[in-house]
Length: 446
Image (cartoon, rainbow, N blue to C red; front, side, top):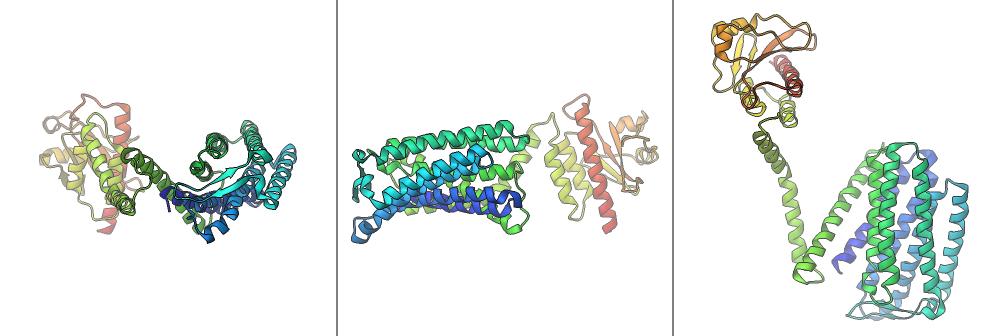
């Protein structure tokens, strides 16, 4: 089976999973409305799977027998999806109920006529190595009616969606609905081209419609989660949502890979070995992601010398809470990444400094006797000869949860600045307070 057909089937499955999670995770009052969403997902799945299987048929007796049912699934699934999407968007309004009912009746009528006499749509089903298709019969008028149905229902649910966005009070919900509107507009336009206009001459491209619509439905489900439109309380629903979101991301990646591969090598379908290699490379990249992220953060902290990489430092300090602390090693780390010539800690009368940080016993005694500040963390450093020799710029107190002083953090001169900005001081205060927690926890363990 062609890779694109496989992707369409996977998207169909993920679409139904997303809709099920929405139904089961919705509040009680929203469940009836979310059932419309599930019906739309089922319609999209029938549409997409029927297309994928039909395009993959070979010219055999069994295939020729099943082909008409697949063609029925293609056009019946699309009708179900369109009507259900309209119901999901507009059913809360009185006029929406009327419009949905009218389109529902029209959709049932179209499919009933087709089911009774498939020749109203096509005169022949063509199964060949060159590509499967149907010979559309324009003389019976069914295809024109189907096209008009599609071209009127798409603007209808977009109009109701615009109305809902304009009257929605929640900013987060408006963002989610706006994403849905943009996605449906783009997918509807692509479906118009590849599933309505081109099929009489290029039937092999009808997979574009269900693939894009399926990704839009999954994308809207992601927006529902992202903008907190529903809350998933059950753990298995969260796992299902994770599978849906990650699976759709993988689909998008494979779709991009297929398009680039086909454009570069002029091959319609990558071999199994190429696809397998691609999955192996994905696995390797995922395994290396933590290391790559660490290297990137470390390099950024080294290169950006005029600002403190507070995120990286906080991450390291937080990790220290789970293992035995080495204050001397931590002092060296902070001096390197805060971009000071020296950093040290004075705890329980013992000094732990970075590699080249040396202080006399007199200087340490003076620092230990500094008064606790009435506000904030910074102590007043006297301009004595000992302090000037050690080039001390700041001394911050480390306090425990009771407010008692348990140590001091001694900071040397900045390497790339003559003075510290307000933002620098705020970030340094955050680091001092976190180190106080680390020292307190270390004292408890010891």
